[in-house]
Length: 396
Image (cartoon, rainbow, N blue to C red):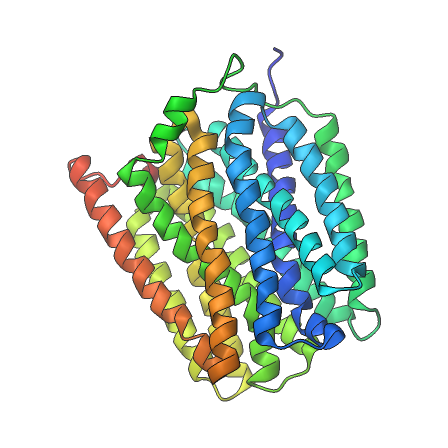
């Protein structure tokens, strides 16, 4: 097989991650408008996160064995088309049921793109996985930041339906790029080693990383899903400005990942993670205690800054330890992560119906503490196993 162009392949991965960022931001961005359109409360609106998380889990479960066996090209092409279709459904569905199905489709395709692009970058970035995966994550942030920014800026002139439909059609542009690009060959073209793939699910280190991402996924989906509603319900700003303030969460995450792409080359990974936990915990406390909008905005930005490092750093550990079946290993930790993404936003919605959204979102700082504890355990185990060296990921 002719060699592939590393730069073009990395560019393709960035396009795929951009699409995933758009998918992850769209529900939180339209949620206030959806609640008005269909006249539903927080608890019923929270069920939409189950549709999203169900799609994300299904896509995460499938992508790993597919890319290890068949490669990346077809998966990226098909998922781009499915995402566009799902967005048209989100825009024009006449009922909550069809809206939920459209969200499921988008989530499924988005998750497959997320997993495949992370596995792809890990495969072509030996020796510098941490920094390259962080740069990849910047494009997730651009997509996630762009959707609420666009809606917040244009909702006074256009309906959310027309804006979401237009965003969906724009996703077809990367599809054309995927169509003509050469990708790395499949790792197991003669058959997928099923027993080895199943064996990965029993690896203690992989499971520990998966639990960290389980919490982190719940945190990111909760912040992305409920922040706009928090500003409108608790701080009484208009839905337009609530969505605009949500974009600042993604902006903080995106700009920090851009910086981390350089810092991870020279700075100890564990140090960056501990600083990240401090930022996100402090930001969550500021947000939940704020009685004015400017203070709450500061909290939202700090949470985004703190969340930036977790996914790329943990995925760098996974890519280093399980390079021989990176797609399947990524699939396992992504499936685990989505259990948190499925449950935490829904739980916040249920508690919010009973006690208010400010009380419901207390789950966020509590979960940050739990994630910190798990990372401490994983860091200690890794350091002990490698006699003082955290892991090869820490030297990226």
